Length: 282
Image (cartoon, rainbow, N blue to C red; front, side):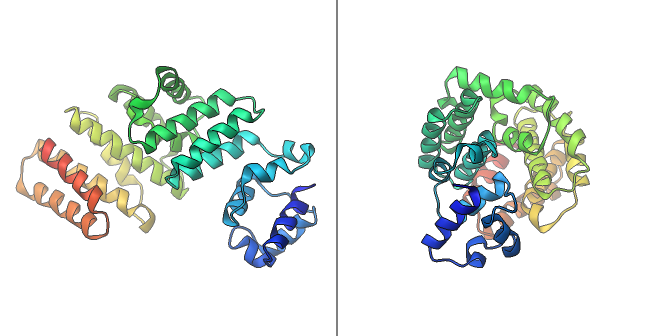
């Protein structure tokens, strides 16, 4: 069975119109031609469509003809599944994906299993749970700076704690050089996360020499609603750094105000974490 015919089968089983089936993922007119096998659907959009309609990606692929399966990058499929499960905070789903990867025939099976185990450790908030082999595998994977793309920066920002501060500074410099003028909002978010994490590390380790570069790099990224939270966090760190060089009360008041703003905007737990960091490092 082809992609289009299988999608139609699932859609009719759920008694949905094409418009309700696709939501805002793709246009209904484009989808109509997919069901007729006249258009191709990207792996990313296919996975979004299946998740949107509560369909198991693994079950869906198992029903496809082998020729149709080969038309999709299975490694990319697993990457999307891992990311979706992680950002949905679902350890159970990640465990299931790991089992599916073990059963699969993808060429980079060890790589995908290591990444999945690393994301499970992230959800447990304890990267020390990883065995030494997996830690080294992830570190080596991200120390290969020959391919810096959107997926790399998203993966790196989650595993920065695996590296010492000097390694992080080297990688972050290269990422900023590569992406500083990029217009993609997700890349801007990822860069700001990396910059914030670097500044946290610099303050914790009393390494203030590198902070000026990272603060200025963050300031170059325009403030917009999508990145406002990240810019707030960096503003807190910027004021802490300023206080280190010029111990004036105005910088402390700015820090307290930013922490309060984050709290009253619905993030009290994170506000408490920032408050602890502030009190420990001033």
